[in-house]
Image 1 (cartoon, rainbow, N blue to C red):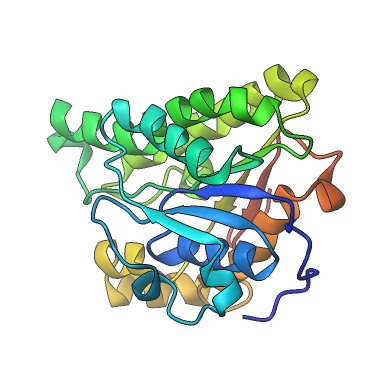
Image 2 (image 1 turned 90 degrees about the vertical axis):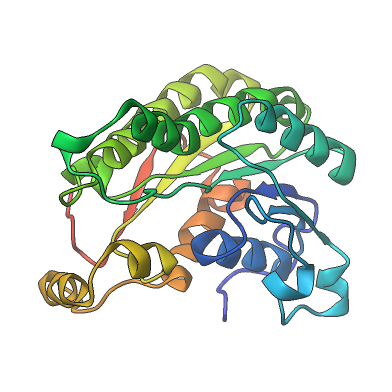
Length: 260
C-alpha cells in the first residue's frame, strides 16, 4: 500500500485500533505502523499472532505492534482493553473504534431481543464504553483523537435485513457529534469515517455476488470500494497536522454511492 503521508507522521502517536484482525481495521493499523505509530491492535475475539495478521512488517514495524484479543460484546472488555492500551503503550493518543459487524441479516419481522442486544452491544455500546474509558488517557495527550467507523447504511437505512445494524451505526454517528462537542475543551477531536460498499469479509458473508454486482454498477465510479480506499481518510482525521480544525464530522467514503 502506497500512502501519501510522511513515514514519521505518527511517530509520537500511541494508537489502539479495534477490529484490526481483518478488513478496514487491519488496513488502518498497518498504515499507522507504516507512518511510525506504536499500535495496540485488537485482533477480535480469538488470539492471533502478529505475523498472521500483518505478514509483511519490517522488523521496526513489528517491534511497534502488539496484538490483543477481546470480546467487545462483554461490557467489561472496554475497560480491560483501554487498561491494556495504557499499560502496553504508556498512554494513548488515538482510538480507532472500528470493531463491528452485522451478525447476519435479520428481517424486521423476525427481530428478536437477543439479536438486538448482540448487534447493539458490539456496534454501539462498545464504542460508548471504549470512548468513555479512554478519555482520561486521551486528556493527557497533546494530539488526542477518536475516529469511529460508521456506515453508509446509517444514512440510507441499509438493505433488507440490516435494520438494527444500520440503526446502531446511526447511533454511533450521533454519539460522535455529541462527544466532539463535549470533549473539544479537552483537546480531543472526535470524527467518523462512513464507508460505502467496501469489498471485505463483511460483504462476502452478508451480500450475494448478484447484489454486489448490481451495487457496483450503480456507483458512479463503477466499482466497489476496498479497505485501501478508506485508509487515507482515517489517517487524515487521526493527525492534528492534517485535521486540527475538524471535529464532529462524518466523512463519507463511497465512490459517489451517496452524495450528501
